[in-house]
Amino acid sequence: MLTPTARLLELLELLQSQPAVTGREISERLGVDARTVRRYIDALRALGIPVAGQRGVGGGYAMRPGFRLPPLMLGDDEAVAVALGVVAAARLGLAGSPDSAASALAKVHRALPEPLRRRVEALEGALELTPASTAAVPVPGETALALAEAIRRRRRLRAAYRAFSGERTTRELSPHGLVVHGGRWYLAAHDHARNALRTFRVDRMRNVRATEDPALAAPDGFDAVAHVSTSLARVPWPWEVEVVLDLPVDAAARRLPPTMAELAAAGGGTVVRMRVSSLDWMAGVLAGMDCGFEIRRPDELRASVRALAERLTTSCGD
Image 1 (spheres, one colour):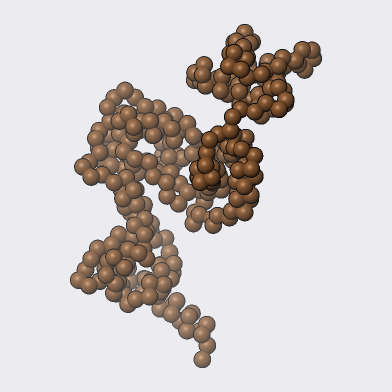
Image 2 (cartoon, rainbow, N blue to C red):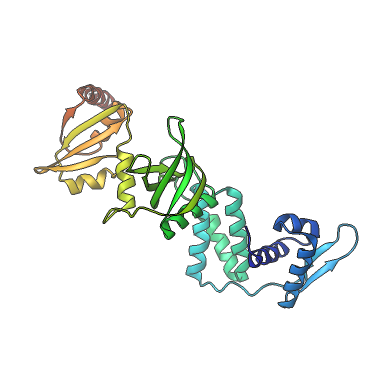
């Protein structure tokens, strides 16, 4: 629920964004009655903001023509950081919705001095972002804020959750960290029903609410990014692959991200354990590693590697 101060700021934004707005529109937007609307208008006038009342059919309230609030005091680098943060969130699918990102960017534009606004708009138009490797799945802003607040206050939370299988459950969680990877939001948390650390897709959570019960502390040295990365690498795909690369483990780590594979040093080489849906795809990954390798399992991977080698040989011709 909005506080009186938040409603007053919302009214000010509404008056700046439209030539005129009726009392009914303000009431519906702010969720208040007509008397409260008039009180808020009087409060703005008391602050020296010239709001004129318009009588008659279709009348309402309007900001005096030519009036603008003092510009937001951002330097060039700060303005670029704020504007491009909103642009990136929208284009990468991380904003709650396209409308919310567009509205936020419009507010930033209105608050900037005219010369800086034009330069920022030019940068936004010129900027191109490469697409994410997977389709982004945005989450409602309220959900993200509720999770962040529970983490900050170290409170347990309850939420309805839909698993990949479609099973729906109600979870009690001690949240430890939020991670965005590949356009998706993940929550690292202790699941009290299962008494274990788990990773949850935030877009599959509903009715998130913090409780007053204290959250279980995270393990010493807990790293939410490392936990989520390991969890994603252990997703149960149809094939479990184990290969030894003729590469030291640090070199292998630069070529295989932790969300894709589990790596372990083995002499001067690296044992790679992965779960994949396609052995033909895995053969392509090995071909791109640019090193020797030994397949430990499954045997079917050898056939996929041989088939890829034959296709490449045929493509090269005589």
